[in-house]
Image (tube, rainbow, N blue to C red; front, side, top):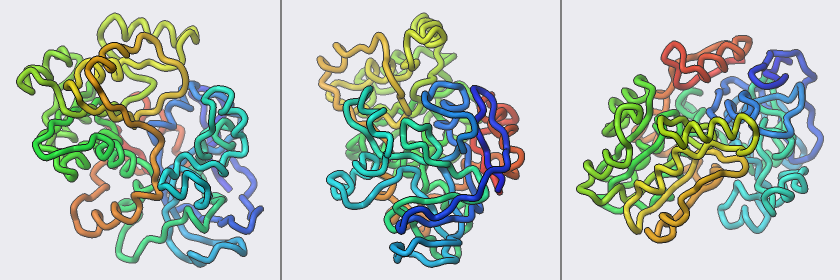
Length: 389
């Protein structure tokens, strides 16, 4: 089969690789009909995620048709259309039983690697390095899905791939980010980053009752999308002082909740942003927390900080004094996708949201390297790339 494979930083190729096979009774094989490039994939593309190996298959946002089932998989049948959560979860451990699906105890065969850095291992992830299990990803013609009796989510007739594809990651991620804000009527929510996750966080904040959403980015087409589709008040952080702008827009109080939808490769215009770039370049710091610093300082006293943006390692110069003395509440983590599949599907079916609004480019799988380049460099007004195997 054809698959998008990692060969090094800024080097992905479409290779011919062996077809996946059933190796466990709880496995399924899915013929992929749609897959996408995620902002998290760019962290791998840029070379910031360790333990990648040449030839690893990328991708964790994918869906398709079931073509083969292990003997223990009874919840779907061959021919069903399914979406596949990017987090791999067993469904029966301590954490899965508490709806904390991305913290599954049993799905990362390389847990010992993560424990050295993090103390405990989160769930395995599709196409996201050997640190998180070494699972082949979904930017391919076929994929093996472990724990398929738990992970595969059947899609009802009448919905296109594009309407449901983002249930695999970015829609639940944006929704959980907003849910983590503990939004109350009248709340003002600020969102850093208007990429796909930020766009869904904006829409979700309104669905959960926010009165106003203020969004920051530097890319004009992203800001326009947040304004047009998300009804957010938008600001270009290269043109304003973020903290001062938020004070002015909130009567001096600051946003009740702040969402960092940027993560480890944030950009900025001040000295600290330059400091981060230099330290990250020489590997004295793994992540660039420019947005996170702004979030902490800008949030209202007693406010909530939600972090869906991916961080991979160690950060520098975090204003923990501000966080502690302002009494901020932090909630973060990889998304518990399984928890949100049914309710978010209902939002789509009810017409509350049409997730297709974020798609700017649809390309054949063979053009994945081009898709990565235009997504990374924001060329051709690219915001979200869907690949068709």
